[in-house]
Length: 482
Image (tube, rainbow, N blue to C red):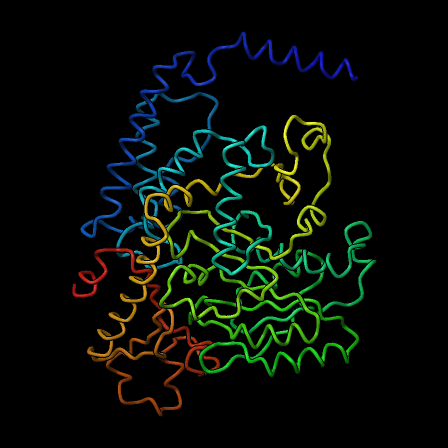
């Protein structure tokens, strides 16, 4: 036994026990509680009440230099009184974008579910790290239950998974797992253990696929971009062609990343046909369903993801369409061989001892490349408990209904032109100014409409205005009529 180590630990705990209360202001716990009550009051007034009101601004926009002066960002040696801290909280909220506002259409995340927010507050207050059962017993069990439910919706009766810090990391993990499964020596020997590799994704994929290839040392040249059809869906025949081409060039194909719900057009790649290609060539199939995965909750629309059960891995972000709140991103695996731990684990002895008083299989920290990992399951679990699967299904169906409503309204208004009829909740359209109406055949039409020139294809680079209708704002219809 290392007696010096344990002696230091005992001294540390004695010092902690003799110190002032941890949760206090200058040793006064009541003052700390009063501060938090005041802050919560500000949040309720400014974020929840005003921040979700259609009569209020989405953002009090200021130019960067002006905003720096307004916020007084400098950090000084002397502290400030509680009254000043509360004023600063109000300033932060005032000049921040209200992403829960009914007129906020800038991102694929939005909305404010009260149960999810309650879960986020509890999570932050408990301030724990999700890596071992001993430090996060409730959340270790809860995470597995939530992941089990998500896997069942994909169509798997067993498997593995983990919550990741965003869909980009989920996608990167999938690439890393596929590489490790094919070449396990790469964990120890690195790129020296690898031949030239090739992975395949569509022209409309999320940029994180190329970013992940660069981060993992594969290089962006290893990403072969598959053509898409007029609706933005991957063309399986072109995937076959590129696989053959990569092999002829001496590269080893190892992964295909399909997309269910592309960022702009909301396209769903044909998963059954892509899975057939992967099966013929022995390739890992990853489905980036960060945006479209929540459609699996809808019996009416889940056909858009037919074939997803044949994937090896799936990325799904409930913080998007389901409004679980940032961040809530799951990586789901069909694998039951403990691939996540074998690929990412390092068996740090001070965390993952094998002689604990519980089943150490519950310790999930070695599944990820992080050490500390925030709890992202509670907000989704609490929201699901409150809404039930049926309530979440209604939420998804309402999103589709509002998207179709918007399409019909656009068709009635002069100067608005649909890029295409949507199959998801992305509604892409042009606003054609009066000076360009009736001049579509003009040689500079595309350049003038896009204000930047380039390829005049209808949606690839002309930057059509797209409105992400997540269907969760009661003010959406009223907003349009205004």
